[in-house]
Length: 352
Ligand SMILES: C[S@@+](CC[C@H](N)C(=O)[O-])C[C@H]1O[C@@H](n2cnc3c(N)ncnc32)[C@H](O)[C@@H]1O
Image (cartoon, rainbow, N blue to C red; front, side):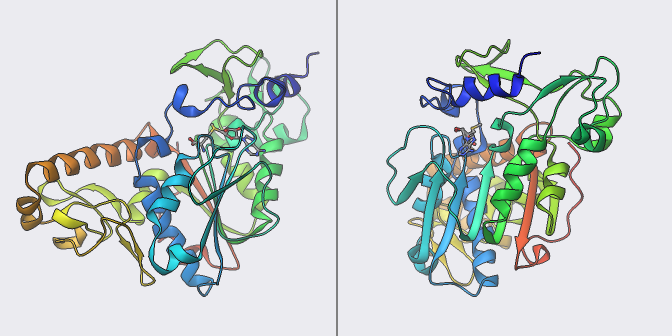
């Protein structure tokens, strides 16, 4: 029988493999870091909370595992200024060719120790795993994805191991953001055809193992959570972003990020975050309306361009929070030596 996990690994990470040779999401599919800077802004709010709970260490890490084109790392580095920004070390980890991004260290191995926030954004779905057809006696399947005759499934054990390893390196917080599924739905047969899929040039295509396309499968985030253990929550991106202040259009259709308002009443990249102050180039002063949303004054001073920018921003936030789209991604957040309850308020459990 063919070793599908090995074939998948070879196609993505072997010599000439899809990611190994330098293909990036931007060329083939859309991920949240490609939408705009808003995900990075929200993660900086989270990072500021982590930093406070760690006691504002002299060196603070942001580690982006499976960094792809490095867009998230670059945005975090660009937007983090002020005292937090000066202490921040941004590391992008990827198996593809190293990219030169200002202020970002690029490596192909996870750092031994991370003090701060480690993020795996659409990393785990790119980790190859065995592809099986039921019935099957694999112990992971018995625990997490009981398959019946003819059902197809992916054995998530390699993702569990990768996530447990990553979380084990962290003091602070580790966050996996990905599309995925839960045991109850898997066992009920909602994914009986499996979720293994291929993408090329913006389209879903028939999977082939020749390195010409991205190969991916949904992540059993509940299994990853248990494997890494400790204090954690699994919530939706839609809810998590709102809890970090990214809620969409406010009064007058202007979007605010948790009281972070730039000049002209429009939230600019970088904004102002937390007591330690992460101040971006646009994040000075600002004319905030209620709950940090640019008020009528802001719109008037900003004029037509400000309105256009706030409308564009509202549409990016809506994309990040869309139910059935990016908003239905899972956020698996672990706190290590810090309580998760201090990072996010109580939120409904994720159900994709
Ligand atoms: C789907 S892409 C996501 C890229 C980016 N995070 C984004 O959301 O736009 C997955 C990335 O994970 C990388 N990757 C997979 N396994 C990895 C590993 N063990 N260490 C580092 N990077 C890995 C791949 O090379 C690929 O660039």
